[in-house]
Image 1 (cartoon, rainbow, N blue to C red):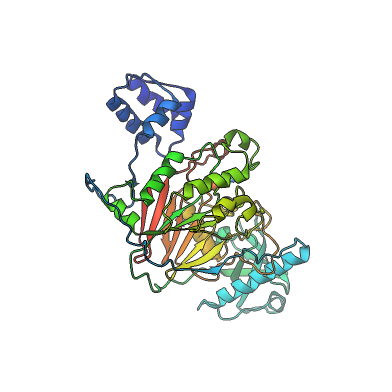
Image 2: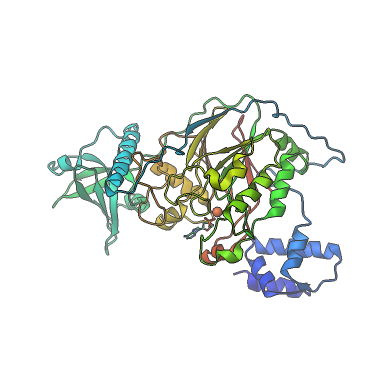
Length: 501
Ligand code: D5M
Ligand code: FE
């Protein structure tokens, strides 16, 4: 898309470029800015270079070794001699694991078990809907069919959503007593825009009345949603948590330079005064999955792999993570496609037999996906984000550039992976672990490789990005990753700052 402009700028500067360098430039987040920055650096280096190759670009950008602060852009002078001392080294770690599926998963994959899973989902979300002041009881679908000329509230699971030629929407809804067709008439614009967001297999509430031939005419659609999150007790001291994900150790596209810079920062060896001050309060790092690149994930992945053995990938991950100071606790959950676990959600922690080197690190805590944690009283829901592909392709207006908006839709649905039968595998557990029954302070995800942040009714929705540059697979899918961006949340203020390594 930007190639023409890139070539034009280069020609004007008397430069030429190789095809793969051009390709690389055009996939940067802001290619034109990146290029002008690059040309400026090239000129300063006095290299007399006319031909731009991929190696030259990599060489020049790796010269840059400072950290950018994006959300707070204050200029601070870097003093000549700096001394680093952690302010949180001697603070006792305070982590409560409120819900972790590891060791508590029993699904065997029988058809009846899926019935249990959906019953559990229905019951849990029914109770959440009942907490709303605008819903006072409900009628079973079986009963509703007998009641004419009366406003009725029904709560059910979406079996199917259909749009007719005349742009009416039909929702097929089931509640274990019976099922019914709900008509959302096209002239009700607000209702239609809500109906377009309805996902298959999610539990919602519909108000309306019986119309004819067992069709229910909707006049209101209510998602469970959340009330505003009240501030619970915050930490008494500034304690920082760094949120990262999708490190993809073992991939040729793993960005070692950026990760080393991140490690240096945790040790107080890089960054300006303000950034070092942030590092001095760093006590926790949470990694939301895709620790390694795995093997056989997509057809040509072998060409993208530096290490083709899964154990070596976790070993290298451990070798990097052990350079982080030991007083910093590192919490790790897996991601479904790349880490060494079953594909269906929820995921147990990565097994010891693959990742012994991580288990051997004293400060590493291995948990499942999703996990609900409490750190100094602040609740974190950590989830890789495996279902985002399905959600983004199902709700109009969502895209990969804004993962936080997909996170908001999941919070409104009170479910991390509502859709069954598309790309995201669900295990038939007796209990539906993916219902968001507790409202956390922070939801931390990864998966899309694009950083995003939003406050929704007091809940911080954070997608932490990645440490992997564009792979052939992502290029095919049109993804533009934002590697090296690390959101840091302060547990005393719940303020989020973004560091770019
Ligand atoms: O995902 C890397 C990126 O690719 C991330 O932005 C999600 C996206 N992705 C992953 N799987 C798919 C499918 N099936 N379709 C479209 N986009 C996808 P990672 O999980 O690290 O490979
Ligand atoms: Fe990933």
